[in-house]
Image 1 (cartoon, rainbow, N blue to C red):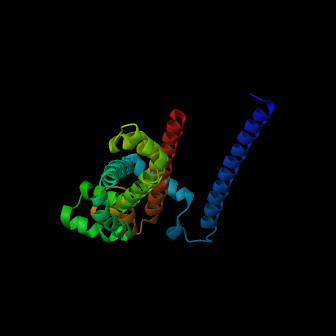
Image 2: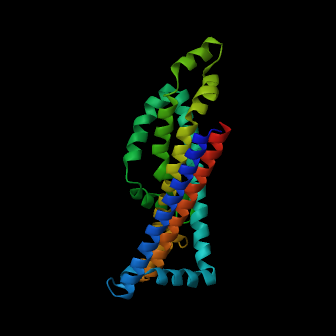
Image 3: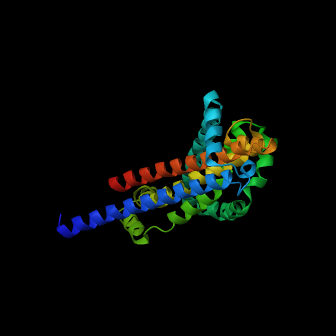
Length: 262
């Protein structure tokens, strides 16, 4: 390794450390300002809460185990929704790629369904499926699936046509093109789709919990709003942000592992 390369790596490491420090500093200053504003009555702590009140609320619910149960339900529903979204995305995009007739029939429908506000579908899911985890998982799937299928299907058609011709010239068929060219070249798009869909699945699950649940963080937000326990509402929102970051961070780690293998 040359000296210039070593210096570059050192400078890059310092830059990343500086960015992390300033992120932490901005976050800490925000918390201090928020707590100060609540204590000095610049804001109404009943409506806007404060860091100390949120910590107290989390500790109070944590002692009984109630909070961890709600987090567990939301996390399980999100992971299941995400799993089915990615499975259906690959299956549906592959079917559309293999069958031009099927693509011509269903592509406009996917575009229309993707443009619908998904919260409008949630009441229908309750009527069709009742309340419970099944309805919430379907709501999570509905938020992400249509755009994800369109994105991956579009990527399938952007592979190198010259390589496709080469496979056919060597006696291959459409299945060979699919597994040797289409899928390998679509892995970056699939990873990016996972980054988006993990957040969308969480959004869909929370929407479902708003309407059809007696457990989960979405339920806590609605319940806390109805009884004016706003510390509970804001605590639940912050926990949702932490969950979203953790899930996204996990996908990033997966992306790094895939890039190393490639």
